[in-house]
Image (cartoon, rainbow, N blue to C red; front, side, top):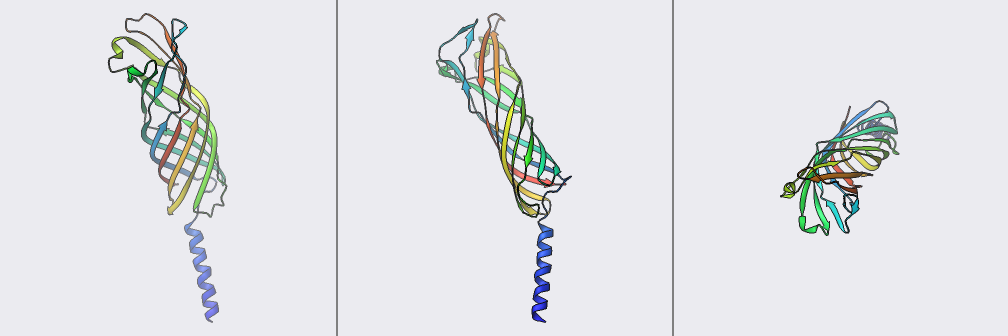
Length: 224
């Protein structure tokens, strides 16, 4: 009798546990939100003035943290499609090399919508759900302007939008029914060309910059 009672108790506990850890299945929608930090790994060319390269006149770009949001639809138990969005990121352009004395001389905002196909290797009974993804990033630059006195000398700053590859790794860890902790990192291939003029509208300047940022996000996830 005691053995039978113990067996029933184990079976019941196992059923309850497996019900509590019910992870992702086909048709699920997962919304993730948290803080997202964009950390550019800058490789800057030199500025060209009137088509002539200016030796050792390069730029750097600082980091920024904003609210990040992503939406994943599970097309299969182990395959999801994710769209990453965020509130606009704002970065300062800083002088480098021969331009180091300029410090922060320009400001630009951008949005980095990124579409990835994700693979979840774990069984859907696992509370820990790591994933990897590959896809495309389209970065939209806007509100470009010179600051800190540089606007008295230069104007008409524009950065080209960028289309490039993206890769990610991340995980969810279920803490309650439908709720998980989330952390993820992306690497994005972002290249842009900046153009600008003198403040009076004359002159042509150009610079090519590879931003290629690492993007880190930590927050929570909710499964519908």
